Length: 275
Image (tube, rainbow, N blue to C red; front, side, top):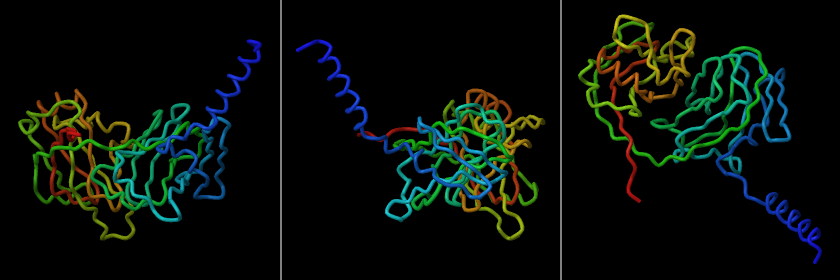
């Protein structure tokens, strides 16, 4: 058989195989087919990316129901949005009114972690922006779980932050065993006694007399160094960087917030179950 014919047949077969390759079930980009507001627009590009023209706190919405029923994402660690270019405005991931993660201006991706949250019944996910902008979402994907976190309590109490009242210090010696990659976990309830207040915040800073926040959640902080948590959230976690560990061992940490009642803080270390 002519070599040119063989080459052409091979090319056709390879193309057919590529077209029939199964899609990554953890890639949920194609689920984003709507917006919260009629004044917003989105276009799905040939490469599968989505160009989203937003208004303040509207939303590019992904319906993730299966057979019209909410899904269980408790086996996943997180959902991540990857952007084609660094964001020009603040962004936020919003997951079925259960939790949300804020992202500051200039980031190329934003991840909302599920660990410690109830994500057994998820109907939709949205990407929101603080101001009108155009942003291209390259990919939205779920990251499978599998890790287990060993927990060591380092603070217990009943601190009701309310309107930035109270707050507490975790002493340096309580971080003596911490290593890079560990997590700080806050156990709390939100104070919903005032129906006119719809946002709830944590602020975590080094206890050195400055307003310097931890590095581990820097990309999730607003312009005032605060992390927003969802109304129904009960756990907030921060992955510690090398600088965080070094500074916390020297200075400790001061914790404050808005309309949050904190009862415990734990130091978490990752390990994997034996297969």
